Length: 487
Image (cartoon, rainbow, N blue to C red):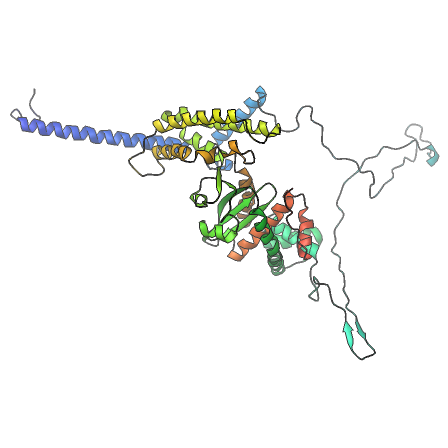
Protein backbone atom coordinates (compact mmCIF):
# COMPACT_ATOMS: atom_id res chain seq x y z
CA UNK A 1 0.00 0.00 0.00
CA UNK A 2 1.40 3.36 -0.97
CA UNK A 3 1.58 6.45 1.17
CA UNK A 4 -1.37 8.79 1.42
CA UNK A 5 -0.62 11.80 -0.82
CA UNK A 6 0.68 14.77 1.11
CA UNK A 7 1.88 12.56 3.94
CA UNK A 8 5.42 11.52 4.79
CA UNK A 9 4.40 8.38 6.70
CA UNK A 10 2.06 5.43 6.28
CA UNK A 11 -1.51 6.20 7.45
CA UNK A 12 -2.76 4.61 10.60
CA UNK A 13 -5.61 2.09 10.68
CA UNK A 14 -8.01 4.74 11.99
CA UNK A 15 -7.04 7.08 9.16
CA UNK A 16 -7.66 4.34 6.59
CA UNK A 17 -11.08 3.58 8.09
CA UNK A 18 -11.96 7.26 7.99
CA UNK A 19 -10.74 7.51 4.39
CA UNK A 20 -12.82 4.46 3.37
CA UNK A 21 -15.86 5.94 5.11
CA UNK A 22 -15.32 9.25 3.29
CA UNK A 23 -14.96 7.53 -0.07
CA UNK A 24 -18.00 5.36 0.61
CA UNK A 25 -20.05 8.44 1.42
CA UNK A 26 -18.72 10.11 -1.75
CA UNK A 27 -19.71 7.08 -3.85
CA UNK A 28 -23.16 7.04 -2.21
CA UNK A 29 -23.62 10.77 -2.86
CA UNK A 30 -22.55 10.30 -6.47
CA UNK A 31 -24.99 7.40 -6.78
CA UNK A 32 -27.80 9.58 -5.49
CA UNK A 33 -26.80 12.37 -7.87
CA UNK A 34 -26.69 9.93 -10.80
CA UNK A 35 -30.15 8.65 -9.86
CA UNK A 36 -31.48 12.19 -9.60
CA UNK A 37 -29.95 13.14 -12.98
CA UNK A 38 -31.34 9.95 -14.51
CA UNK A 39 -34.83 10.82 -13.23
CA UNK A 40 -34.51 14.40 -14.45
CA UNK A 41 -33.30 13.20 -17.83
CA UNK A 42 -36.24 10.81 -18.12
CA UNK A 43 -38.67 13.57 -17.15
CA UNK A 44 -37.18 15.99 -19.69
CA UNK A 45 -37.38 13.32 -22.41
CA UNK A 46 -41.01 12.71 -21.44
CA UNK A 47 -41.82 16.40 -21.62
CA UNK A 48 -40.07 16.79 -24.97
CA UNK A 49 -42.03 13.80 -26.27
CA UNK A 50 -45.41 15.18 -25.23
CA UNK A 51 -47.89 15.89 -28.00
CA UNK A 52 -51.64 15.81 -28.57
CA UNK A 53 -51.55 12.02 -28.70
CA UNK A 54 -50.07 11.35 -25.24
CA UNK A 55 -51.08 14.42 -23.22
CA UNK A 56 -53.77 17.04 -22.88
CA UNK A 57 -52.05 19.40 -25.32
CA UNK A 58 -54.20 20.50 -28.26
CA UNK A 59 -53.04 19.53 -31.78
CA UNK A 60 -52.30 23.21 -32.50
CA UNK A 61 -49.38 23.03 -30.03
CA UNK A 62 -47.71 20.02 -31.66
CA UNK A 63 -44.23 20.84 -33.00
CA UNK A 64 -43.66 20.77 -36.75
CA UNK A 65 -41.79 17.47 -36.56
CA UNK A 66 -44.68 15.80 -34.75
CA UNK A 67 -47.24 17.13 -37.22
CA UNK A 68 -45.09 15.81 -40.06
CA UNK A 69 -44.83 12.41 -38.38
CA UNK A 70 -48.61 12.25 -37.91
CA UNK A 71 -49.16 13.22 -41.55
CA UNK A 72 -46.77 10.47 -42.71
CA UNK A 73 -48.56 7.97 -40.46
CA UNK A 74 -51.94 8.97 -41.93
CA UNK A 75 -50.56 8.61 -45.45
CA UNK A 76 -49.08 5.20 -44.61
CA UNK A 77 -52.41 3.98 -43.23
CA UNK A 78 -54.29 5.35 -46.22
CA UNK A 79 -51.88 3.60 -48.61
CA UNK A 80 -52.22 0.31 -46.72
CA UNK A 81 -56.01 0.56 -46.69
CA UNK A 82 -56.29 0.45 -42.90
CA UNK A 83 -57.96 3.85 -42.80
CA UNK A 84 -60.05 5.75 -45.27
CA UNK A 85 -58.63 8.58 -47.33
CA UNK A 86 -59.79 12.14 -46.92
CA UNK A 87 -62.58 13.44 -49.12
CA UNK A 88 -65.07 11.47 -51.17
CA UNK A 89 -64.73 7.69 -50.86
CA UNK A 90 -64.67 5.42 -53.90
CA UNK A 91 -68.16 4.16 -54.65
CA UNK A 92 -69.85 6.75 -52.46
CA UNK A 93 -72.60 8.80 -54.16
CA UNK A 94 -71.56 12.30 -55.12
CA UNK A 95 -73.04 15.33 -53.42
CA UNK A 96 -73.44 18.50 -55.45
CA UNK A 97 -75.88 21.34 -55.94
CA UNK A 98 -79.32 20.15 -56.99
CA UNK A 99 -81.49 22.03 -59.47
CA UNK A 100 -84.73 23.44 -58.14
CA UNK A 101 -87.99 22.27 -59.72
CA UNK A 102 -89.57 25.69 -59.03
CA UNK A 103 -87.07 28.48 -59.65
CA UNK A 104 -88.01 31.92 -58.35
CA UNK A 105 -87.12 33.62 -61.61
CA UNK A 106 -86.53 32.50 -65.20
CA UNK A 107 -84.38 34.37 -67.70
CA UNK A 108 -84.85 33.28 -71.33
CA UNK A 109 -81.87 33.42 -73.68
CA UNK A 110 -82.90 33.12 -77.35
CA UNK A 111 -80.65 33.34 -80.41
CA UNK A 112 -81.63 36.00 -82.92
CA UNK A 113 -79.88 34.65 -86.02
CA UNK A 114 -78.56 31.33 -87.26
CA UNK A 115 -74.99 30.68 -86.23
CA UNK A 116 -74.23 29.24 -89.67
CA UNK A 117 -76.05 31.14 -92.45
CA UNK A 118 -77.11 34.20 -90.44
CA UNK A 119 -80.84 33.95 -91.22
CA UNK A 120 -83.29 35.40 -88.68
CA UNK A 121 -84.81 32.90 -86.22
CA UNK A 122 -88.41 32.90 -84.90
CA UNK A 123 -90.23 31.51 -81.85
CA UNK A 124 -91.74 28.78 -84.01
CA UNK A 125 -88.20 27.49 -84.62
CA UNK A 126 -87.69 26.71 -80.90
CA UNK A 127 -86.49 23.10 -80.46
CA UNK A 128 -86.20 23.19 -76.64
CA UNK A 129 -83.67 24.52 -74.19
CA UNK A 130 -80.86 23.62 -71.82
CA UNK A 131 -81.24 24.99 -68.28
CA UNK A 132 -78.68 26.16 -65.77
CA UNK A 133 -79.46 27.70 -62.40
CA UNK A 134 -77.69 30.27 -60.25
CA UNK A 135 -78.34 30.37 -56.50
CA UNK A 136 -77.89 33.78 -54.95
CA UNK A 137 -79.09 35.85 -51.99
CA UNK A 138 -81.15 38.93 -52.78
CA UNK A 139 -80.22 42.28 -51.31
CA UNK A 140 -81.73 42.47 -47.84
CA UNK A 141 -83.45 45.56 -46.49
CA UNK A 142 -85.05 45.91 -43.06
CA UNK A 143 -88.81 46.34 -43.07
CA UNK A 144 -90.64 48.73 -40.73
CA UNK A 145 -94.02 47.67 -39.37
CA UNK A 146 -96.07 50.39 -37.70
CA UNK A 147 -98.47 49.33 -34.96
CA UNK A 148 -101.40 51.68 -34.31
CA UNK A 149 -103.40 51.31 -31.13
CA UNK A 150 -106.70 53.02 -31.84
CA UNK A 151 -108.82 54.71 -29.21
CA UNK A 152 -112.61 54.41 -29.37
CA UNK A 153 -115.16 56.52 -27.50
CA UNK A 154 -118.21 54.81 -26.05
CA UNK A 155 -121.69 56.36 -25.73
CA UNK A 156 -121.17 56.21 -21.99
CA UNK A 157 -118.32 58.70 -22.38
CA UNK A 158 -115.47 56.23 -21.66
CA UNK A 159 -112.58 55.94 -24.09
CA UNK A 160 -110.98 52.50 -24.71
CA UNK A 161 -107.52 52.13 -26.28
CA UNK A 162 -106.34 48.90 -27.88
CA UNK A 163 -103.31 47.18 -26.36
CA UNK A 164 -100.01 46.80 -28.18
CA UNK A 165 -98.54 43.28 -28.52
CA UNK A 166 -96.18 42.21 -25.74
CA UNK A 167 -93.09 42.60 -27.95
CA UNK A 168 -94.06 46.15 -29.03
CA UNK A 169 -93.18 48.20 -25.96
CA UNK A 170 -91.12 51.19 -27.08
CA UNK A 171 -92.00 53.88 -29.65
CA UNK A 172 -89.35 52.27 -31.91
CA UNK A 173 -87.83 48.84 -31.25
CA UNK A 174 -86.20 45.92 -33.03
CA UNK A 175 -88.33 42.91 -33.94
CA UNK A 176 -87.78 39.28 -32.85
CA UNK A 177 -85.96 38.25 -36.02
CA UNK A 178 -83.55 41.20 -35.93
CA UNK A 179 -82.83 40.42 -32.28
CA UNK A 180 -82.37 36.75 -33.19
CA UNK A 181 -79.59 37.62 -35.65
CA UNK A 182 -77.85 39.76 -33.03
CA UNK A 183 -77.96 36.93 -30.49
CA UNK A 184 -76.85 34.45 -33.17
CA UNK A 185 -73.74 36.49 -34.02
CA UNK A 186 -72.90 36.89 -30.34
CA UNK A 187 -73.60 33.38 -29.05
CA UNK A 188 -73.10 31.14 -32.05
CA UNK A 189 -70.42 32.91 -34.10
CA UNK A 190 -68.67 34.54 -31.10
CA UNK A 191 -68.41 37.93 -32.83
CA UNK A 192 -67.53 40.82 -30.47
CA UNK A 193 -70.13 43.48 -29.74
CA UNK A 194 -68.82 46.20 -32.03
CA UNK A 195 -68.33 43.84 -34.93
CA UNK A 196 -71.90 42.61 -34.53
CA UNK A 197 -73.03 46.21 -35.16
CA UNK A 198 -70.82 46.29 -38.25
CA UNK A 199 -72.15 42.92 -39.45
CA UNK A 200 -75.80 43.98 -39.05
CA UNK A 201 -75.11 47.11 -41.09
CA UNK A 202 -73.20 45.25 -43.82
CA UNK A 203 -75.62 42.35 -44.21
CA UNK A 204 -78.98 43.94 -43.54
CA UNK A 205 -78.47 47.69 -43.75
CA UNK A 206 -79.59 47.96 -40.14
CA UNK A 207 -77.85 50.55 -37.97
CA UNK A 208 -77.74 49.31 -34.39
CA UNK A 209 -75.68 50.65 -31.49
CA UNK A 210 -73.42 48.68 -29.16
CA UNK A 211 -75.70 49.58 -26.27
CA UNK A 212 -78.72 48.14 -28.07
CA UNK A 213 -76.77 44.96 -28.81
CA UNK A 214 -75.90 44.55 -25.15
CA UNK A 215 -79.54 45.13 -24.22
CA UNK A 216 -80.65 42.40 -26.63
CA UNK A 217 -78.06 40.04 -25.13
CA UNK A 218 -79.42 40.76 -21.64
CA UNK A 219 -82.99 40.15 -22.84
CA UNK A 220 -81.98 36.76 -24.24
CA UNK A 221 -80.55 35.81 -20.84
CA UNK A 222 -83.80 36.73 -19.08
CA UNK A 223 -85.95 34.80 -21.56
CA UNK A 224 -83.80 31.67 -21.11
CA UNK A 225 -84.49 31.16 -17.40
CA UNK A 226 -87.43 28.83 -18.02
CA UNK A 227 -85.48 26.83 -20.59
CA UNK A 228 -82.50 26.38 -18.25
CA UNK A 229 -84.75 25.27 -15.36
CA UNK A 230 -86.51 22.75 -17.61
CA UNK A 231 -83.20 21.47 -18.96
CA UNK A 232 -81.78 20.94 -15.45
CA UNK A 233 -84.86 18.93 -14.44
CA UNK A 234 -84.65 16.81 -17.58
CA UNK A 235 -80.92 16.05 -17.27
CA UNK A 236 -81.37 14.74 -13.74
CA UNK A 237 -83.67 12.00 -15.09
CA UNK A 238 -81.23 10.65 -17.71
CA UNK A 239 -79.22 7.46 -17.04
CA UNK A 240 -75.85 8.64 -18.44
CA UNK A 241 -74.31 12.13 -18.43
CA UNK A 242 -71.00 13.56 -19.64
CA UNK A 243 -69.31 16.16 -17.43
CA UNK A 244 -66.28 18.37 -17.93
CA UNK A 245 -65.00 21.86 -17.19
CA UNK A 246 -62.57 24.38 -18.63
CA UNK A 247 -61.10 27.64 -17.46
CA UNK A 248 -61.97 31.11 -18.71
CA UNK A 249 -61.44 34.64 -17.45
CA UNK A 250 -63.57 37.48 -16.16
CA UNK A 251 -61.24 40.43 -16.51
CA UNK A 252 -58.09 39.31 -14.70
CA UNK A 253 -59.84 36.69 -12.53
CA UNK A 254 -60.27 33.02 -13.39
CA UNK A 255 -63.71 31.52 -13.91
CA UNK A 256 -64.80 28.06 -15.05
CA UNK A 257 -67.30 26.81 -17.58
CA UNK A 258 -68.85 23.53 -16.43
CA UNK A 259 -70.77 21.33 -18.85
CA UNK A 260 -73.23 18.48 -18.34
CA UNK A 261 -74.39 17.02 -21.63
CA UNK A 262 -75.63 14.13 -23.75
CA UNK A 263 -76.09 13.62 -27.47
CA UNK A 264 -79.33 15.64 -27.31
CA UNK A 265 -78.88 18.15 -24.49
CA UNK A 266 -76.22 20.62 -23.36
CA UNK A 267 -76.08 22.60 -20.12
CA UNK A 268 -73.15 24.98 -19.65
CA UNK A 269 -72.81 26.74 -16.31
CA UNK A 270 -70.46 29.66 -15.58
CA UNK A 271 -68.97 29.67 -12.08
CA UNK A 272 -66.23 31.47 -10.17
CA UNK A 273 -65.15 28.13 -8.69
CA UNK A 274 -64.03 24.78 -9.99
CA UNK A 275 -65.18 22.94 -6.88
CA UNK A 276 -68.33 21.48 -5.37
CA UNK A 277 -70.05 24.87 -5.16
CA UNK A 278 -70.22 24.94 -8.96
CA UNK A 279 -71.90 21.52 -8.95
CA UNK A 280 -74.50 22.79 -6.46
CA UNK A 281 -75.06 25.99 -8.49
CA UNK A 282 -75.68 24.08 -11.73
CA UNK A 283 -78.24 21.86 -9.98
CA UNK A 284 -77.79 18.65 -12.00
CA UNK A 285 -75.11 16.39 -10.52
CA UNK A 286 -75.68 16.91 -6.79
CA UNK A 287 -77.69 13.86 -5.70
CA UNK A 288 -77.65 12.41 -9.22
CA UNK A 289 -77.77 8.59 -9.23
CA UNK A 290 -76.95 7.74 -12.83
CA UNK A 291 -73.56 7.31 -14.55
CA UNK A 292 -71.26 10.33 -14.89
CA UNK A 293 -68.51 10.04 -17.50
CA UNK A 294 -65.55 12.26 -16.60
CA UNK A 295 -61.76 12.62 -16.65
CA UNK A 296 -60.88 11.55 -13.07
CA UNK A 297 -61.00 15.08 -11.63
CA UNK A 298 -61.28 14.81 -7.83
CA UNK A 299 -64.38 17.02 -7.93
CA UNK A 300 -66.49 14.25 -9.49
CA UNK A 301 -65.42 11.52 -7.06
CA UNK A 302 -67.15 13.52 -4.32
CA UNK A 303 -70.50 12.66 -5.95
CA UNK A 304 -71.01 9.51 -3.90
CA UNK A 305 -74.55 8.66 -5.05
CA UNK A 306 -73.56 8.50 -8.73
CA UNK A 307 -71.82 5.75 -10.66
CA UNK A 308 -68.70 6.74 -12.56
CA UNK A 309 -67.30 6.07 -16.00
CA UNK A 310 -63.80 7.25 -16.88
CA UNK A 311 -62.83 8.76 -20.22
CA UNK A 312 -60.88 6.23 -22.28
CA UNK A 313 -59.24 8.92 -24.40
CA UNK A 314 -57.62 10.43 -21.29
CA UNK A 315 -56.51 6.98 -20.14
CA UNK A 316 -54.93 6.21 -23.51
CA UNK A 317 -53.02 9.52 -23.44
CA UNK A 318 -51.80 8.83 -19.91
CA UNK A 319 -50.67 5.34 -20.88
CA UNK A 320 -48.84 6.72 -23.93
CA UNK A 321 -47.18 9.27 -21.65
CA UNK A 322 -45.68 6.68 -19.28
CA UNK A 323 -44.93 4.17 -22.06
CA UNK A 324 -41.95 6.28 -23.19
CA UNK A 325 -40.08 4.96 -20.11
CA UNK A 326 -38.48 1.60 -20.93
CA UNK A 327 -39.56 -0.06 -17.66
CA UNK A 328 -43.20 0.90 -18.28
CA UNK A 329 -43.55 0.22 -22.01
CA UNK A 330 -44.73 -3.41 -21.87
CA UNK A 331 -47.69 -3.16 -19.51
CA UNK A 332 -48.74 0.37 -20.56
CA UNK A 333 -48.78 -0.41 -24.29
CA UNK A 334 -50.58 -3.72 -23.79
CA UNK A 335 -53.18 -2.15 -21.49
CA UNK A 336 -53.88 0.62 -24.00
CA UNK A 337 -54.35 -1.97 -26.75
CA UNK A 338 -56.73 -3.93 -24.49
CA UNK A 339 -58.91 -0.87 -23.83
CA UNK A 340 -59.20 -0.24 -27.57
CA UNK A 341 -59.98 -3.92 -28.22
CA UNK A 342 -62.77 -3.89 -25.64
CA UNK A 343 -64.21 -0.74 -27.19
CA UNK A 344 -64.20 -2.36 -30.65
CA UNK A 345 -66.04 -5.37 -29.24
CA UNK A 346 -68.61 -3.06 -27.62
CA UNK A 347 -69.15 -1.17 -30.89
CA UNK A 348 -69.70 -4.47 -32.71
CA UNK A 349 -72.21 -5.55 -30.07
CA UNK A 350 -74.15 -2.29 -30.48
CA UNK A 351 -74.24 -2.70 -34.26
CA UNK A 352 -75.56 -6.23 -33.75
CA UNK A 353 -78.36 -4.86 -31.58
CA UNK A 354 -77.15 -6.54 -28.40
CA UNK A 355 -78.05 -5.16 -24.98
CA UNK A 356 -74.72 -6.13 -23.46
CA UNK A 357 -71.38 -7.70 -24.28
CA UNK A 358 -71.37 -11.50 -23.92
CA UNK A 359 -70.53 -12.49 -20.30
CA UNK A 360 -67.77 -14.83 -21.50
CA UNK A 361 -66.08 -11.93 -23.31
CA UNK A 362 -66.50 -9.72 -20.25
CA UNK A 363 -64.78 -12.27 -18.03
CA UNK A 364 -61.94 -12.83 -20.52
CA UNK A 365 -61.32 -9.11 -20.95
CA UNK A 366 -61.47 -8.52 -17.17
CA UNK A 367 -58.93 -11.30 -16.54
CA UNK A 368 -56.50 -9.83 -19.07
CA UNK A 369 -57.03 -6.39 -17.53
CA UNK A 370 -56.18 -7.70 -14.05
CA UNK A 371 -53.01 -9.44 -15.28
CA UNK A 372 -51.72 -6.29 -17.00
CA UNK A 373 -52.48 -4.13 -13.98
CA UNK A 374 -50.60 -6.64 -11.80
CA UNK A 375 -47.59 -6.29 -14.12
CA UNK A 376 -47.84 -2.53 -13.85
CA UNK A 377 -47.94 -2.68 -10.06
CA UNK A 378 -44.89 -4.97 -10.03
CA UNK A 379 -43.00 -2.47 -12.19
CA UNK A 380 -43.93 0.50 -9.99
CA UNK A 381 -43.01 0.69 -6.34
CA UNK A 382 -44.31 3.79 -4.60
CA UNK A 383 -41.64 6.52 -4.84
CA UNK A 384 -40.24 7.87 -1.60
CA UNK A 385 -40.59 11.47 -2.80
CA UNK A 386 -43.92 13.27 -3.29
CA UNK A 387 -43.03 15.15 -6.49
CA UNK A 388 -46.19 14.84 -8.59
CA UNK A 389 -44.62 15.49 -11.99
CA UNK A 390 -41.83 12.92 -11.71
CA UNK A 391 -41.93 9.91 -14.04
CA UNK A 392 -42.01 7.47 -11.13
CA UNK A 393 -44.88 9.24 -9.36
CA UNK A 394 -46.95 9.59 -12.54
CA UNK A 395 -46.48 5.92 -13.44
CA UNK A 396 -47.28 4.76 -9.90
CA UNK A 397 -50.37 6.97 -9.65
CA UNK A 398 -51.64 5.79 -13.04
CA UNK A 399 -51.35 2.07 -12.40
CA UNK A 400 -52.81 2.58 -8.92
CA UNK A 401 -55.79 4.34 -10.53
CA UNK A 402 -56.27 1.37 -12.87
CA UNK A 403 -56.45 -0.90 -9.83
CA UNK A 404 -58.56 1.37 -7.60
CA UNK A 405 -61.06 2.45 -10.26
CA UNK A 406 -61.31 -0.83 -12.13
CA UNK A 407 -65.12 -0.87 -12.21
CA UNK A 408 -65.35 2.75 -13.37
CA UNK A 409 -62.72 2.26 -16.10
CA UNK A 410 -64.49 -0.85 -17.44
CA UNK A 411 -67.97 0.66 -17.04
CA UNK A 412 -68.35 0.89 -20.81
CA UNK A 413 -67.75 -2.86 -21.09
CA UNK A 414 -70.52 -3.74 -18.64
CA UNK A 415 -73.00 -1.07 -19.82
CA UNK A 416 -73.26 -0.42 -23.56
CA UNK A 417 -75.12 2.85 -22.90
CA UNK A 418 -71.84 4.22 -21.53
CA UNK A 419 -69.42 5.55 -24.13
CA UNK A 420 -65.71 4.83 -24.15
CA UNK A 421 -64.71 8.51 -24.13
CA UNK A 422 -65.90 11.81 -22.75
CA UNK A 423 -65.61 13.45 -26.17
CA UNK A 424 -69.24 14.56 -26.02
CA UNK A 425 -68.56 16.94 -23.14
CA UNK A 426 -65.32 18.16 -24.68
CA UNK A 427 -67.06 18.93 -27.99
CA UNK A 428 -69.77 20.84 -26.15
CA UNK A 429 -67.15 22.90 -24.28
CA UNK A 430 -65.05 23.69 -27.34
CA UNK A 431 -67.11 26.80 -28.32
CA UNK A 432 -66.12 28.44 -25.03
CA UNK A 433 -62.48 28.24 -26.15
CA UNK A 434 -63.41 29.67 -29.53
CA UNK A 435 -65.19 32.52 -27.78
CA UNK A 436 -62.08 33.21 -25.71
CA UNK A 437 -59.85 33.32 -28.81
CA UNK A 438 -62.20 35.48 -30.87
CA UNK A 439 -63.90 37.77 -28.36
CA UNK A 440 -61.48 37.68 -25.42
CA UNK A 441 -62.38 37.42 -21.75
CA UNK A 442 -65.68 38.36 -20.13
CA UNK A 443 -66.08 41.72 -18.43
CA UNK A 444 -68.47 40.52 -15.72
CA UNK A 445 -69.89 37.35 -14.23
CA UNK A 446 -73.27 38.33 -15.65
CA UNK A 447 -71.75 38.33 -19.13
CA UNK A 448 -70.29 34.86 -18.56
CA UNK A 449 -73.70 33.58 -17.38
CA UNK A 450 -75.44 35.05 -20.43
CA UNK A 451 -72.98 33.36 -22.75
CA UNK A 452 -73.29 30.01 -20.93
CA UNK A 453 -77.10 30.08 -21.04
CA UNK A 454 -77.22 31.10 -24.70
CA UNK A 455 -74.71 28.41 -25.66
CA UNK A 456 -76.79 25.84 -23.77
CA UNK A 457 -79.86 26.86 -25.77
CA UNK A 458 -78.14 26.97 -29.18
CA UNK A 459 -76.28 23.68 -28.65
CA UNK A 460 -79.41 21.84 -27.49
CA UNK A 461 -81.59 23.16 -30.32
CA UNK A 462 -78.93 22.26 -32.87
CA UNK A 463 -78.69 18.71 -31.51
CA UNK A 464 -82.46 18.42 -31.94
CA UNK A 465 -82.44 19.66 -35.53
CA UNK A 466 -83.88 23.12 -34.83
CA UNK A 467 -82.49 26.08 -36.79
CA UNK A 468 -80.62 28.55 -34.60
CA UNK A 469 -82.40 31.57 -36.13
CA UNK A 470 -85.82 29.94 -35.72
CA UNK A 471 -85.05 29.00 -32.12
CA UNK A 472 -83.82 32.52 -31.30
CA UNK A 473 -86.81 34.15 -33.03
CA UNK A 474 -89.10 32.05 -30.84
CA UNK A 475 -87.07 33.11 -27.83
CA UNK A 476 -87.57 36.82 -28.51
CA UNK A 477 -91.24 36.18 -29.33
CA UNK A 478 -91.62 35.04 -25.73
CA UNK A 479 -92.11 31.39 -26.71
CA UNK A 480 -88.69 29.70 -26.34
CA UNK A 481 -88.15 26.20 -27.68
CA UNK A 482 -88.24 23.75 -24.76
CA UNK A 483 -86.28 20.49 -24.54
CA UNK A 484 -88.45 17.45 -25.27
CA UNK A 485 -88.45 14.24 -23.27
CA UNK A 486 -86.07 11.66 -24.81
CA UNK A 487 -87.79 9.00 -26.88
